Image (cartoon, rainbow, N blue to C red; front, top):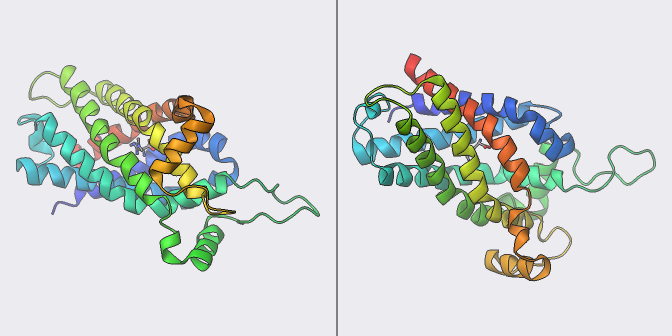
Length: 263
Ligand SMILES: CN(C)C(=N)NCCC[C@H](N)C(=O)O
């Protein structure tokens, strides 16, 4: 199994994250104050995504990354490989994403003299307390919704990238840097716009049960969210998700492509 795609995915994920840092800081308040935890987690998840995607394409089409410019895979194969990568990366992402959402929704004021201490003091403390209170399965709360979010949308991600690259690249040639940046950016937007409805549900499932259990499952969470807040609930956060997705994924794809060309 070729491993260079995993390594390139690791480095490109870390570079994309650095670029998305200001957006994540806005979204997550203190979570990204230290960069080591998000870099380690997102780089690992991106490495799984790109490594599994490329190896699935290799299994489906018997072409390596370099050969795919002269013998491009069908969009159906790209979609299946993207969905496979999305499905597997969701399980690696689940505990990290849970910690992110729990810290993001922590409402206790931080470090105020005389005030109540925050429930979680940081990512490691958050992971340890979930593990202690809910066991190892607790760290995978919301993983099913995350899988539903990421499996099809990562298929869409890679198909959008391939369609745009092929559209603006002469046959048999490598896409230019500008093409990779634009195609990567729009791939990020397409995946996040389609992922946002289940992203909202996933975050609610991850917070459920902290005080009391409100939802029976993913479907119940969807139905009660729409009943209470209307269909607009599914698009909460879509603007910030898209604004962040363009630069993050432009840089992720550019660095991924270049690392594999030099490697
Ligand atoms: C859930 N969705 C839509 C995705 N995971 N899309 C792929 C983009 C991955 C990139 N690290 C990012 O955070 O934008």
